[in-house]
Length: 168
Image (cartoon, rainbow, N blue to C red; front, top):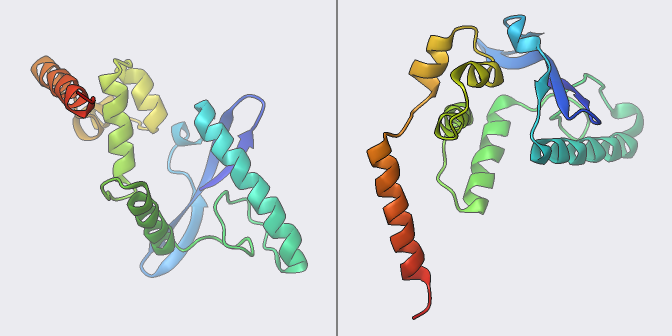
């Protein structure tokens, strides 16, 4: 991801992407104008990106002239783009370390869509957050909404698990 963090506003603008196409890393502009729009970020994301920026500044100082400045948020120790497969491996390793089920990195977009739906975020807002150009993509592909019966069953399960975890 190539982006510019507006730290005071807690917003990120993404203008370029990096992907592997036929064995080549391609650094290209984002697909649509909507995907280039400024994205407001939750505080936890702003904090993580600030830490990332601090780590990058330290890495840049450590390697001096060997640093490659390309504007990417996630880079190697020398500033070059992270190979997407290596990024996926790091993502899987962090999932293992956190003790959560491994999913593909792209599936985090589906998780975000489903969480937004479960929180009753308006579909148009979810569409903007996920950077989709069509509401149908957001609603039919990226959003998995549990029924009220499912929600009720999960609340009941949660209460039961909470009671089971409490000492007698």
